[in-house]
Length: 449
Picture 1 (cartoon, rainbow, N blue to C red):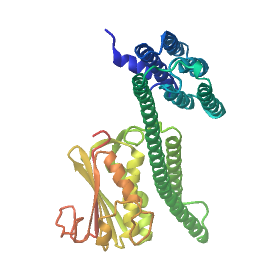
Picture 2: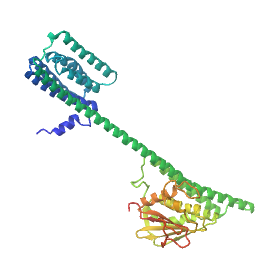
Picture 3: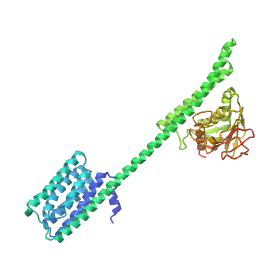
Picture 4: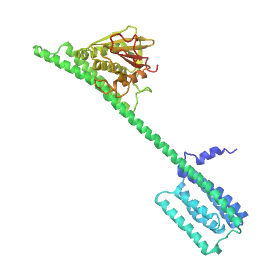
């Protein structure tokens, strides 16, 4: 049993080039139309010669259909079709089948349009021009030499021939135009998809560079601050007549070295993302490993304590003993806690900042709160949006990045301000001590949780 759907897909499917599809339609249609025209010609008195010419056209169309698909030599088949069928056989059929008092002028238009579709550039222009001139010349010649034309006997025969020609040519050209428009629309949709992808890549690139500049500024700020501490300590030692450096200076220089290494790792990771996006999983973070958030938080508080003291802020940490390790990206989690602490030091205008860490089910809850003046209610509902920053200035990226990191680790970040929560209502949460200005709560479960 013939599977017509497979045959149609094989010879006319969208996987083929447009001109290949078009030629296959032309060859198949030429085979069918020639057979119909030849048989109908016998009934309307076109004669045996007209029938034989149509059968020759049918055979040549079928042969070209088979040969083009088997060999892939479509350009050769285009040329044979134009020369042998459009110029040769169409001329004989014109004179044997009624001349311009028949449907043949419709087939001439059919030939010109298919030549335009199949060829391109200068070759297309030359061939279509020659066809128009040649077909016009045939009509003029037939007018001045009527004895060369086998005219149809009656008006009825002429009517039947015209109707058959209109149906055949309209059907083939209709399918051709539908195919052409379908291909055009598909290309337009592909271009639109490509445009959207380019815009998305541009947006991702901008976010990547914005986030990268924000994240790299943090270790640079630490290095700068501790380098300044070290310089001041060396100057004080020199003024006191002492030589060498003390233990605090050594510790400060070690901190600078650690932050420089962290910055190098961050740059390396960013370059990998830019070049290959390798080394990242589907959540967009780097290598997953067990992370002790209690130890990480305590280390960051100790690291930032001198910076806070220079602003007159007391920075302390409260870590419970039962905090579990969670699977995560240690660098990203370091950046998360660092950003929140830095925001508190920069914006709180208070005298105290506390980091409290405890277990929460199988994860970790970290609360960072201060005794400052709180956040403007107009800003509070937008603090996690990119570009939103408080009165202390900044890029407005820190909390947005924090929330992204927390959500990739199965959690989230929420923020509450003095006397009101994020909905603008009085806050009575147990996570919100009475003299607190701002409280930031981080919940973490771990990657893949």
